[in-house]
Amino acid sequence: MKTILARLIKDESGATAIEYGLIAALISVALITGATALGTSLDNMFNALSGQMTTAQDNM
Image (cartoon, rainbow, N blue to C red; front, side, top):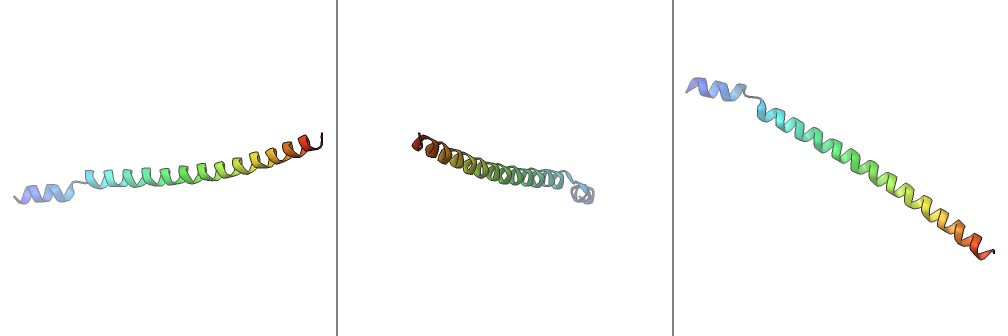
């Protein structure tokens, strides 16, 4: 019984899996943040372009 308990205490496979899960979650948050920032930037750029095209069309 002592050897089984000692083996369970030394087993780090669960801790490793949790660490990999945390790393994957952190990478996911970084990707979502970057995609959101890029999306906002593109939205602003296309809105500005649309406004310029509307102004150019009204001046014709």
